[in-house]
Length: 165
Image 1: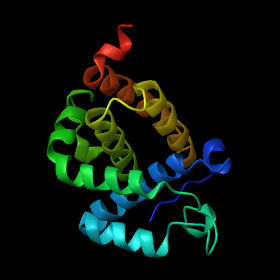
Image 2 (image 1 turned 90 degrees about the vertical axis):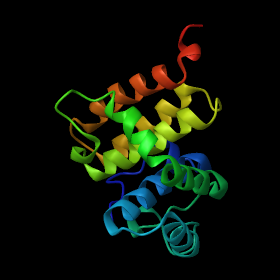
Image 3 (image 1 turned 45 degrees about the vertical axis):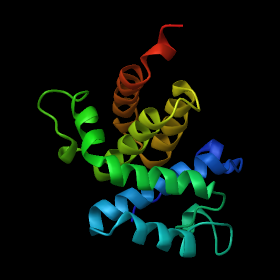
């Protein structure tokens, strides 16, 4: 199971929505890699990995989590996965596929794409900033830069009117 290499500033400040997104990425990664259903992974996370009891990120826990947002994102990605992968794929370089992406990066892009497609709140730029903060927690190389480009393209595609104001 992948955990952030460093906690993001937002997560350190105790932002439950950021925690929900971190946990959703971890749960989506686990579901993708282990073949477990979204409901099984949600149950495992709620019972064993969310909340302050038993440690923090370094112990594999997410201490502060907006559980409704966490479950909404994980269930939404599970339900709309094929559509989300199609949208993500359309914004990758021609020789790249969603399957070729690093599994944590794939989970991050799927979660963000679901948020862009499922609601108009929070604003797309806020969603991008949140997922970029998380990307920097998981990756130290070029992945955050790659994620930024794809997230921007996804947001402009799925929430175009927000960018014409």
